[in-house]
Amino acid sequence: MSKFRPVWVEIDLSAIVHNVNSIQKKLKSKNTKIIAVVKTNAYGHGILKITETLLNQGINFFGVTSIDEGLLLRQKKINASILILGSLYPFNNFREVIEYNFIPTISSIDGIKQLNEYSKKFNKKTVFHLKIDTGMGRIGISPDSVNSFIESLYEYKNVVLGGIYTHFASADSNKEYTEYQLNNFKKVISNLRRYGYSNVIIHTANSAALLKYPESYYDMVRPGLCIYGLLPFPKADKFIDIRPALSWRTKVVFLKKVTTGKSISYGNTFITKKDSIIATIPVGYGDGYNRSLSNRAQVLIKGHRCKIVGRVTMDMTMIDVTELKNIRIGDEVILIGKSGNDMISVEEIASIVGTINYEIVCNIHTRVERVYKNG
Image (cartoon, rainbow, N blue to C red; front, side, top):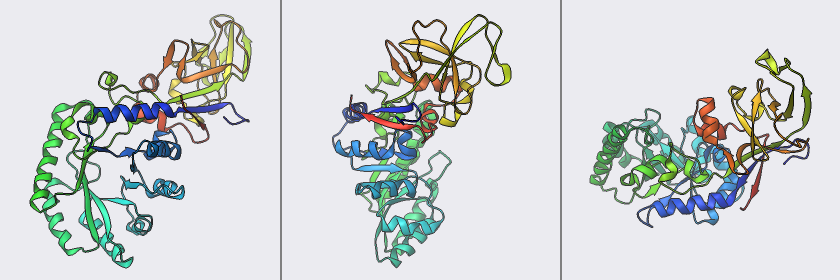
């Protein structure tokens, strides 16, 4: 926690370890490996510390969004396999891919041509993973184009097909569409084997598919949410034993007695209906605490729920603490996490905002310090 501003995110690394162990138990075979998705600062949990923790658990394959994230890991002497999951355009990015031994995702014939050219300049053979768009509609080569892509590889001597994968659009919610995507992918794999590619790493399963579709495991699974103890769909905790690793904490920095009929915060959206005690906390939408939580969310203080009153401002938010006894400046406030017998989950906050749990944790600003503990 910063000595100047009492706002911090606490990451329980023992929960990360527990979750990885639960994922490994879920897998059918010990030969099925894990690509740990640590993109977007490990979903707001801190890419360096999370990656180091996972390395200590025997995981040596990581998925990141971009070269920038990969470089953060390489600068810390992390020599594990790093798959760049995002687009690598402009193609001069292949210089860094080759120099730092990243595994690029290739989604087009233009991409493989450029990768081969850069690899030739550096006198290297670069391993890549081919992304198949089976129905996500984001990046990836269409299943109908795979044969011509594979045939074109014979022209390129400085690239090696090391893996092939796809991404599910709705494994959390749409069985029919997920099976449609799986069937598309199975056809691609059959074609690939006809061309003699039998030792290519195959991976498809995100966290939702990991829990619902064992047939999607192949050689590796690619969990993100489950590593951090976040639920990929409602009641997913019935399928796997995971624990949230992240809690978001702050402290009361100001207290005031307010009489009936007084306005709190911008826009006069909250007027006191009785004499009240209002606490101010130094957290706002500038920290990633969403403005739409205004007048709707609650926080935990000493195990009791207290309502947000008035609009969340950029750097501060107000709470009605009238019913609390012995409230003091410096008391801890839980925005996300446990206090006493109660808990405010990331999923609860996401539901209020009208979004997904991914967005809540990814949007916690980097100015909020991450503090790590083990249990």
